Length: 218
Image (cartoon, rainbow, N blue to C red; front, side, top):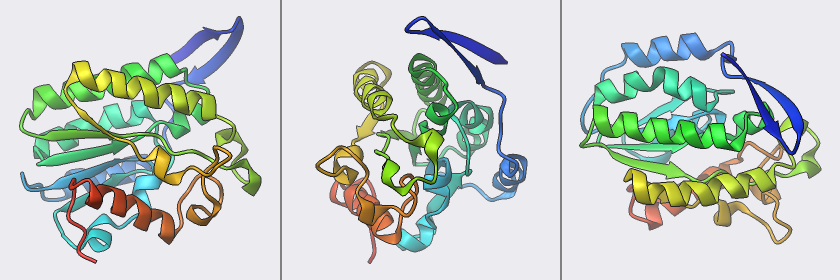
């Protein structure tokens, strides 16, 4: 499906069907792996993908379901694999690639709602955590389509917190832990203004651990 959305009287074209080249191979792999109701699933795009969560957190229960380049429509398309596994918890971070592809905020939010409702219906015992979008930093000058989306990021993060009250999930607010005094992603946490360094992943793990969402055995 190709969508068209009017924003401030400007017509913006966007495509819900785009998938990264690696998408099918990763989904096929996910479907082939064993599942357990003790699993803790990290679901998202490259930010999730590039962390080896089981090694980082020191527990094989932590499962990586990140696909580089994925968007909210891609997560919805493969959500059945997560639901069938009926994990103990699922942590979702998705949306920055949607913004880079000009998918409207309202559509992204509707997809968040669809994810939450499908998870609650399909695996009601699973605890659902959405994580707020991280800031970006255009000073790296590498991923230009992803930069300067802070207004959209703030809108989505605020709306996600409101949605949590009615849809019955919890929000983990990562954004304040990664933003500098100018509103950009802290340079020490990134190597291209979007993706994270080891220090960035340690900060993420620290936020989850301090909030008692996970146990970080470091």
